Image 1: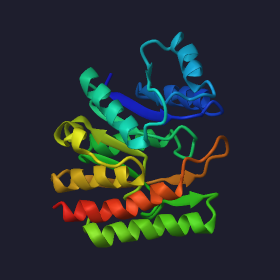
Image 2 (image 1 turned 30 degrees about the vertical axis):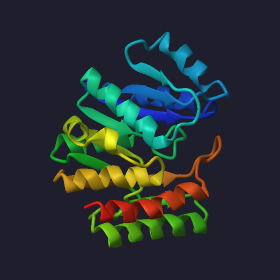
Image 3 (image 1 turned 90 degrees about the vertical axis):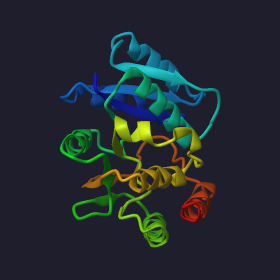
Length: 234
């Protein structure tokens, strides 16, 4: 019981059962924590039905209403640390992150990395099915972040990550400020500033085919503002 995959959800009924069963099929005994923000489409009910057959492996943390990606992960991190997991993963529910890559992220952390980032923008990484404007915003945001923070991470907004428990025990989770893309940047930035080793593992990111994207203009704006705020806080 040393590996936990945290998957935040809001209206993911089309994907949730498939993603859970796929993760459970992987070698290495991955456990799963679904953090569901009161999905009105019944996502939580699907997870509960699966728990009947996977009592030890599948866990559900239900919250009331959309409280943001960052707060979902913080709640999941705290839960994972309380339970004693040593490798704690972030992953989307929509198969944009290939569950098979969990093994590669774990391998990176088990062999010296403190944080392993599933990266679209290192050699071997790529994006599939994204429109050009989305790619432009994402790559531009990554460059913008590196120029301002000097953080040596080529995909700072990536959300497919493995943390060693000691990283999350050291970062003051209650002081993490942001909830969208800026949350992903802030977590990597805090880990880097604390001296932890970050390794980028190339992945192929495939845009969702089921359900609705959670991207919004406000999330992008928060990231742009948040990068400056982080830098000024040093």
